[in-house]
Length: 214
Image 1 (cartoon, rainbow, N blue to C red):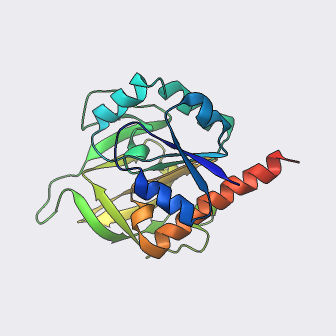
Image 2: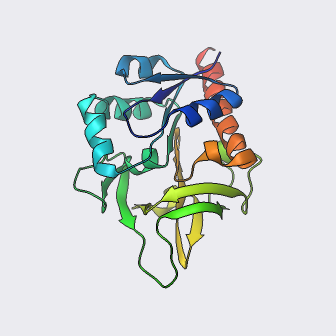
């Protein structure tokens, strides 16, 4: 049984993320207890809402340092939407420092004619790290579902695993570095492509389990 901890920090509906993981073959475990995150096979950090409250809630639960330690340990970790943004150092949305795991900043979309903000709805991925496990059987051009008003700008662009174009702006849709993966879109709301991405994450967790059991 593959147990994936889903971090509860009062930033969004956890139900859809848990249902997506269940459909992908995992057992989701909703928790805000650091010791329980450490014993899970993988960890998911979902989230919707604003950057500052997210960081305040994570710190009030003493979860910031355990998240850093979990990622440093090599445990598979997936951030979703706001769960991607808080991995960065700071955001133009607020004043709170982020987790600082990924160097870079969360930025506002630049104003331009006919650009809708938030970027909400279906858009097509362009894979920039096409060979990572998260994208197994996923292709550039696949449609996924976004809801966001800010986007990630990693200091090292090679961390981008996928981009998306909104208006004339090409922005980060996903990042990947070793065991750390995060997506700006909502895979749990992205139909067959999203389910495949979640299934791929579960498969990566299971592969890590098998390696660890040898």
